[in-house]
Amino acid sequence: MKNFTMHLVVGVAALGGCTASAQTATIREHHTLGIASTANMERIPPASGLSAHDWTFVKDCAKGHMAEIMMGRIAQANGSGWSKEFGMDMVREHGLALEELKTIAQQKGFALPSGVNMSQMKMINKLSRTSAGAFDATYQKMMLMDHGVDLHKVQAEIHNGRDAMVRGYAVKLETAIKLHHDMASTRTTMENPHE
Image (cartoon, rainbow, N blue to C red; front, side, top):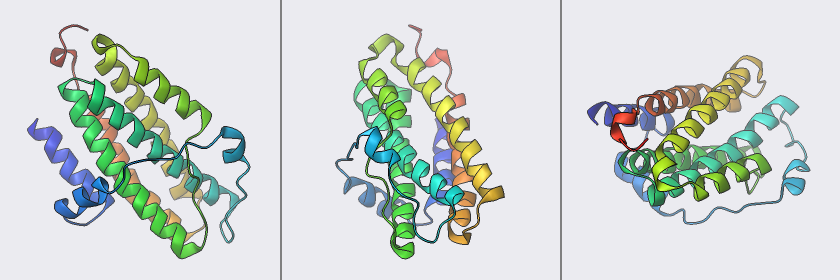
């Protein structure tokens, strides 16, 4: 567990740059996340002043953070030791990342999406229905896949984005996403002998 904690500290530092107590206090203020219909989510127009690529990245990031937070809460409620701890980390770290993205949105004068997309909602629903015996393996698989997709999007923004503030956010996020992927890949079936 020492490696897990060390990665977490580095990941949080990469995301937020504020003290651990301040990060915890920030996350505890977030109790609910809205879920909008897919039809409405996809009709959100590009943010003023952002290229289509930058806006797609921002929109996807916001939805991704919300999905990670929701799945992290399910993991805390339904998972075993590994899932509970990883879920707690995801709620905290993606919550911090979402807050930073909200700050960028306020400075740029645009609104972020208020909910997740349909495929993310399906994943969240699947996880919430997963039995206790299969939960850790299912959650780990989802986290590996999800963070792999996120890493690709972040790297595409770093190379192709036009807005300096959004690209800067992507650079910081890349380090944390890599750490999250590594943290998910270190879980072994030894932690859950029923798998």
